[in-house]
Image (cartoon, rainbow, N blue to C red):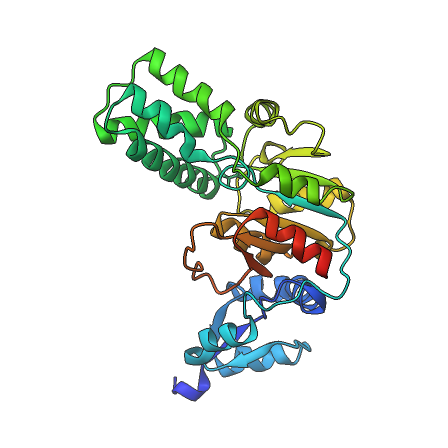
Amino acid sequence: MQSHDCVTLFIYGQRQSDLCILAREYNARFSTYLKSLGKPVIMSLDRRELLQLVSTGAAVSLAPASSRSQQLSTTQSSNQVSTGPNKQFKAFVFDAYGTIFDVYSVAALGEQLFPGHGKELSQVWRTNQLQYSWLRSLMGFYEDFEKVTLDALVFACNRLKLDLSAGKRAQLMDAYNKLDTFPEVKEALKGLSGIPLAILSNGSPKMLQAAVKSSGLEGVLSKVISVDEAKIFKPSPKVYQLAVDHFKVKNPVEIGFVSSNGWDAIGAASFGLTTFWINRSDAPMEELGLKPARVLHKLTDLVQVVKKD
Ligand code: LAC
C-alpha cells in the first residue's frame, strides 16, 4: 500500500462542550461499523475502508498518521480549555485515593513497622495496587479494592523482603481506612458548597465509608460511589457511567470530575465528563492522546475556576 493510501482516522478527543457530544455521537454511530471491520476507533484504514466509512456520513478528522499527535496537541491546550461560559455543573465528583486521601500517608506507619523502608513500601504498595486493579479489569476477574489492596501489600513486602506478620498486615490495612486528607480538601469542598459533591472511587464501599468517616467528610458529600457497583475498576467507562446514573444527567459534560491521578482524569475525559486534573506534583501529562479540560495545582484552585466561569 502506498503511503498516501493509508490515513489515520480519529475522532477528536475533546471531551467537553459540543465537541464532546459530537464525539460521543460518532462513537455510538460508528461502533457497529467499526466492529464489523474488527478495528478499534483509532486505527488505520486503507482507501476502500475509508471511502466506505466516509460514505456513512462520518464527520471525522482525517490526517496522515504522522500528524495525528500534532493535531491532538494543537487542538487541546490543557490549561487554556474553558469549562464553558457560566457552565453550571450538576455535580462535582472526586476521585478518592490520591486526590482526597493521601495514600502515601501510610509511609509513617510503614516506617514504624519496617524502619528505613516506610516510604518505599508506600510507593511499591500503591504502584501494585493500581496495576492489580488494571490487570483484574483486563482479565475480567474482579475482586473488591480491599482484596486488591491487601494483595498489593503482600506483594510489596515480598518484593522488599519485609516480613509481614499477621499483626503488621492488619495494622497497615487499617491505616488505609484512616488515611490523611490533603491539607486543602476541607476548604475546597466548603468553597464548592451549594453544588452536590461526591466521591467516585475504586475503593470498596466499606473502605470508603471508613476513610470518609475518619476524615470528617461525612455530611459534606452527598454520595460516595464505589466501582463495586460496576464490578470493574477505573478507567473503565462503566465506572464513569456510574456518576451519570447517580446524578441522572443527560450529558456527562454536566459533571465535573476531579482527580489527581493523571490516568484517571484522562479516563474520565475519554468517557465525556468535564475533567479537572489536580496536578499537585507538577507531573508530566500522560501521553494517552487526550487531555483533561483543566489542569490545576490544588483542589482550592477549582473553587476559583468555578466562581470565574
Ligand atoms: C480511586 C483510585 C484511583 O480512588 O485511587 O479511585
